[in-house]
Image (cartoon, rainbow, N blue to C red):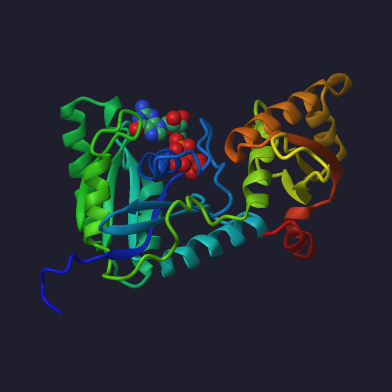
Length: 309
Ligand SMILES: Nc1nc2c(ncn2[C@@H]2O[C@H](COP(=O)(O)OP(=O)(O)OP(=O)(O)O)[C@@H](O)[C@H]2O)c(=O)[nH]1
């Protein structure tokens, strides 16, 4: 084989960072489609949602993980497990630290966790670069450098990026791709996510249900799609996707919050979720949503398994 054969690279990258540091937004910017679900509030990315960057020279599979949580409940521990397992499997780790916030104990904790896994290319990403002036950015980059020294992590790169305005996103993609191992395409072209649609749908419903009440119900909602399928007997040009889903809360009081006065809130949740699902899947949707109380589901391994954790 001659050296003229262009090298194709492929592999997995994972962005980690405290909640709200811009991981989902950056994943979306890299992938170029809204697959990972960004939100203005912390701790929404509960499932590992992957997006795929397809280029002529490479395929980069983005694995989006939940923020590393200090374990509180059994669910918290599961999340940590997921993160550690994910990190152990990827080729590159990107640590997101937003430029508009000081590098702090949360970042230190997280970088120390990253340091526990087998050494692999590790890139520090100074996210939200559009929010700060060059002076503050310089200070931030120095703090990141220092964090590397303190924790014994050797940054392969330290890159300022703004996913919001698209600044240096291509450069970051080049840097990530350049550090992938040589290998064949892992997924067929055009495939943006390998997350089962049910999981995406459940996540969108959960998002809609949390809107406005996130502080009251941070970890107490889980959604399970019971059944999903195209309705039979519809004309080909007018498909309808039927979705039957259950929304689980832990206490009757939480159920009341979700339902709202006279059921008004629940109706809005249903409409919002349906519109989101239609936008992403591109099909009109009939959504049948029920609320159930599953007492202490976060602490019950059987319930957790049933809910897909
Ligand atoms: N100005 C600016 N805001 C950003 C940028 N990237 C993300 N944000 C905002 O920061 C907030 C958090 O972004 P996400 O992408 O949801 O953060 P995340 O790290 O995935 O959050 P979790 O899912 O909670 O872990 C959102 O309001 C985004 O709009 C950026 O480059 N510039």
